[in-house]
Length: 317
Length: 87
Image (cartoon, rainbow over all chains, first blue to last red; front, side, top):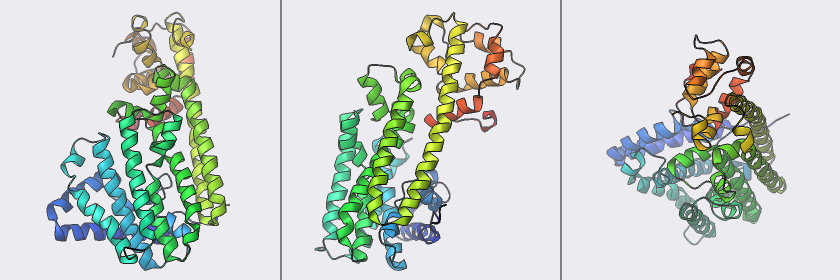
C-alpha cells in the first residue's frame, strides 16, 4: 500500500506559482521574449506546466530536493523550484534546437535561453556565496551534463558502453537542486549517495527515452541506442525490434531499474522509494501490455506472409 | 506506399510490421477485419499486393487490434493518430 502521496501538493503549487512568476517577470523585462516563451512553453508542456513537471512519467526533478531534505522550508523550496523550472526549460530549448526536434520555433527564440539560464542560476546565488562548496557541485554537474550532451550528439548512434558514458549522463545535472537542498538541510555528507542514485536513475530514464523514441530519433537523425544496437547487428531496425529488440530493450530497462532501486535504498527517503515502486510498477505494466501487442503484430506479420505464399517475413526471422 | 513480394525485403518487411509503419492502411484493415467498415478485407489487402484466402479474414478478425495499435502509438508518438480509430 502506497502511503506517500505523489505528486506532493506543495510542489505542484510551487511549480504553478513559480512558472507564473517567471512569465510575469519576463513580460515586465522583455515583452517580446515573454510572448515567445509563453507560446513555446504552451506548446511543449501544455496549458498547465505544473502537471507536466509533476506527472508520474516525468523525471521527478522538482520532487528530488524535498525527498532529499524533507525539512526544506517553503521559501527554499520555492527558490529551488524556480531554478529547476528555468533550468529544465533552458535545457529543453537548447536540446530541441540541437536535436532537430523542432519546426524552427526553438531556433528562432534561442536568445530566450539567456533569461532562462539567469533564472536557473540566480536562486542559488541567493542561497550560497560564490566560495560555498555548493558551487563545486554546480560547476562539475552542469559541465558534465553539457559534455555528455555534446559527446552523445557528435558520436552518433551509441552502443551500450558509449550510451552509459554519454547519453545516460545527460541528466546528471539533476543533482544540482539536490545538492542545494542537502546543503540547506546541513547534510552535504549525503551528497555522494544521492549522486549515485541520480546517475542510476538518469540511465534508466534516458534508456526509456531511447527505447520509446527510437522511431522519432530515426526520423530526425538523432543518436539513439536502439538504432545503434540494430546497426551493430547489421539488421533492419523495424524487423529486429519486433523480433528481438523489444525484449532486448525491456531487459536492459529492467537491469537499469534494479540498479536505480538499489541506489535509492540507502538514501533513507521513504517517499523516493514509494515513488520508485509506483513508477516502476506502472512501467512494467506498460511493457507487459506492449509485449501483448508485439505478439499480435508478429501474428499479423505471419498471417500476411501467408497471403504471399509464406515467402517472406517468417523466413527472414 | 505500395509493397508486396517484389519489394521484399525492405518495403515488404516494413509493411508486415504494419502497425508501426502504414498506420492508415492498418486502420482500414482493422476496420474491415472487425466489420467496422463496408470495405472487404481482400480489397484492402490487395492494395498492397497481398492475397486473401479462406481462413485469413477470420484470423485477422481475431487479432487484438487495440494491442497492435497501442504498440504503434507507444513507439511512434508523433504520428497524428485519429482517436476514433483506436479501439
